[in-house]
Length: 307
Image 1 (cartoon, rainbow, N blue to C red):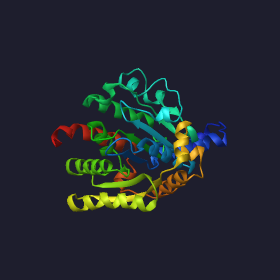
Image 2 (tube, rainbow, N blue to C red; image 1 turned 30 degrees about the vertical axis):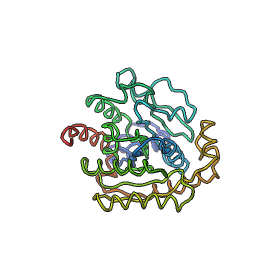
Image 3 (tube, rainbow, N blue to C red; image 1 turned 180 degrees about the vertical axis):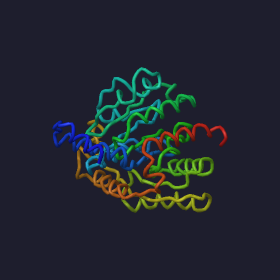
Image 4 (cartoon, rainbow, N blue to C red; image 1 turned 90 degrees about the vertical axis):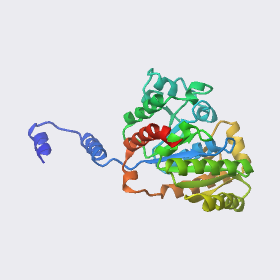
């Protein structure tokens, strides 16, 4: 009330749009919008994890979400390559202090924002504890500008992969119809649950011949986890093997953009609608980037104690 009176007493005329923008900004500060933080990982490489990350990000953007896609496959980054984007700076320049995080963000299709990582730099694949903390602290500068943060992690169980997964609200494990994919996915879930207290995972079957095959892959994994681990698995869907997806990759485009009516694109859209309905406990849903940063720092400082 005092603020309103002061504005009126000043005699200044404020455009209605400016006043509305200021009010919207104030509401975002007081009640920041919930942020979904989703890590997409796999036990092994070659299961299409990055394609899943890209297409889920674009599907969410097409459904009205502001999406930030982080290429966290440090050392073997390829999101920019798969989308045909040119990147001058990447996360290595943030770690070195040459650029801020905002300065390296590039815009992708459907207005998604992408944070590129470096390619072929061994240093990026083996960040020190201090460097990892510095990298994640940089996210605090992004504010509350996004609805969803999707993290395309590397494959396997490196410290960097583990830390990103610990810091996320949800972890999607991508599996494929080959024995190594299931056994390595199980090993990943085992490490995350027994050593890092992550006991809830979402499973996505990729490049399956049909939905039945996808369900069977999930059952193979869940049978093992039900028997030996104290975890909860949630099957979120199957993305079928699709020649149009391979064609989209060859043209450096996401299949949901290039062939929106293709079987794989329709599957990504269904899975995205599923993800949009996920809810979290209050401590998770209101954490924003601060939650992500704090979780990352905590995971770094306790990493040595878990092995």
